[in-house]
Amino acid sequence: METYRIADHRGFEAGGRHFLYLSRDNAVFEADRETRDWIRRYAGDAAGLTRAVASRRQAPASEAWAQLEALLARRIILREAGVEDAARAAARSREVPLQTLVLHVTDACNLGCAYCYHGQSSPARVAGTGCGPGKGAAMSAATARRAVDFLIAASGTCDKVVLVFFGGEPLLNFPLISETVAYARKRAADTGKRVSFAVTTNGTLLTPRTVAFLHAQDIGVTVSMDGIEAVHDRFRRFPDGSPSYRAILPRVRTLLEAPRKKPVVARVTVAGEPEHVPETLDHLLAMGFSETGFAPVTTDDPAFQLDARGMVRLLAQFHLLSERFLETALRGDFLGFTNLVDLLVVLHEGEVKTHPCGAGLGLFSVSPEGRLYLCQRLTGEAEWCMGDLEGGLDHGKVARFRAMTGVERKADCRACWVRAVCAGGCYHEALIREGSLTAPNRHYCEWIKTWTAMGLDVYARLFMACPDYLDKLSLLRGHAPLHSRSI
Image 1 (cartoon, one colour):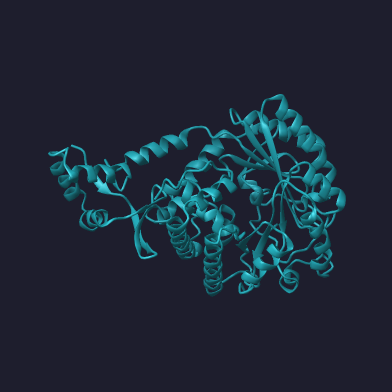
Image 2 (cartoon, one colour; image 1 turned 90 degrees about the vertical axis):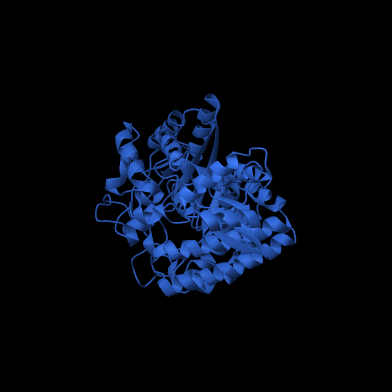
């Protein structure tokens, strides 16, 4: 006999209407009175629900059975608990092709940011990594070519691959970037693939020549910049202690004012007091950045770390910006608040995460020496080296990593209603804050729940007023339009 249960869910209201968020499927539905009655009556009562389903099945042509079929189709009522878990496990067991490779083209950096995470993670970090001009290894052209060849070979049937240039400050090794782009384009053309590129820079080396190259080659650019001058210069200084904002500003303007195909985005590290966040967003967007994203600093140093009170205040700033985003969207305009855009797209696409990110799945990082690591932030962590360009990935080690970091292996996450969005949080953050890469970010749990609830509220109100806007956000992130299939 088939058994049934009410799916894990969270009910919420927006604009005076009732909605339902399905935790396992990352799906949002408007919940009418009948749906809410089913949930109220049978949540936690699988036996009673199974009997109710059997009773209504006796009259398959009835309105009651039609309503039940709709609940089954939307997976609000699940048939045979555990079946969907087996399907997800089978999907996870399939080989994941490599799609993105992050090249640490240099470990050196010409800034001395006080909160930089280089060297913080563990004593097992490979010797020689670090910051400072002339400090740290630089990738050779031969290693970069091997990395490109590895990406092409390991990408399997994927027709699109991505190369990301990272550091240190990657533009310190600009000649290598230029050479690697040319080589990668040729290799991709020879194998029938398309390759795209991205770079993250501190902005200090954005000369007219580098800017012209980045735009001519259609390379996506992210600039690390913390906002207005006083905020930026608190922690982002040169090694001699001098401030960097005024040195960077004209160079960033050269980048932003040049004709380009791709948007340029800013990434802000939030350290200390977060009240400046709305002003920072306005400042960076006014400069010409298309979007700005904010990330609390990853550190165990109380001088920079946001404590529980600081995280609550950051959430308050995010709430203000979310309301502004909604008001702007309802006027048909766009506010480049990356954090909310990303969350709305995840909700709209219905992506279900079994792991927090692509690290160790479709993404790996290459050190200057040619070693393969889980991601750019874990490059140099000896324990999380997954092979090298000569011998390839250690598939056994990769498989063990995937198995032990899946969200179902994290007891604190299995029953959490945001698990499909969060999946336990950033591995590097967990290593710093929780002492283990495989641990969920418990210090972050309530924050991400509240932030996701805010996102759901904006999502539902946006859908009610202008549903096509959600498709436009998906298109912005490179997804095909869904015509608002969730609600």
